[in-house]
Length: 258
Ligand SMILES: [Fe+2]
Ligand SMILES: [Fe+2]
Image 1 (cartoon, rainbow, N blue to C red):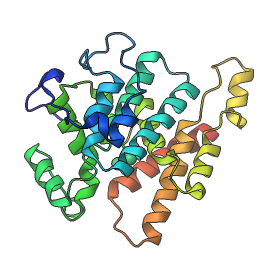
Image 2 (image 1 turned 90 degrees about the vertical axis):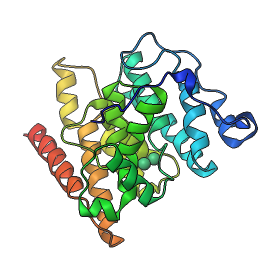
Image 3 (image 1 turned 30 degrees about the vertical axis):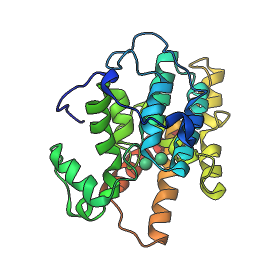
Image 4 (image 1 turned 90 degrees about the horizontal axis):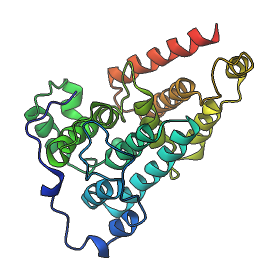
């Protein structure tokens, strides 16, 4: 995970003067301006409203709408997963910050990743956009003073995933996949895989083992499979990590089916 070059206090972040006049301002206005208590590594002023006011002006209006949509799905998924308020907050915070560097040029992302000490493969040097998650985690740490590893991991892992992933990281990954503007033939199978009213969860429910939960691992597997198909169909390079992460979730799903 990223290590900090230096922590800055949240109040040192300068926001654009015209924030309230632009689309980003509209998208930020109804977000909560308070926090569900102290969360280690999250500065006390970093509310969801403050996070969005920092993140959304960094991207185009269309991207800002995507980020806001990911936040909305993330909040919904966190509720479906019965997360505690602090954990839901971490999902929502990571959703708002995940694409902060998405519109940086590939060369800039490569330079930044190297300046943060990342060792890059030749594929990553050619496809700098694959680094926008890890670079965003470093920038968030440096500019917002956020050092919460769970949130930083979720931001880092939102594009390629990881082995293993926390539930918070899976929820952010899935929220990014399920954002409203994504094609329905991509989102529908993922929503279907998430549904808790499927075979083995029913068994667990009947035996009183746990309350019904969404099937995050099933949904991750479906999302990764569909993403791989899309990469193959569009004849783009496959990052080896995508294959490793897909096989990792296949193993989990197969093990739970036995
Ligand atoms: Fe992204
Ligand atoms: Fe995204």
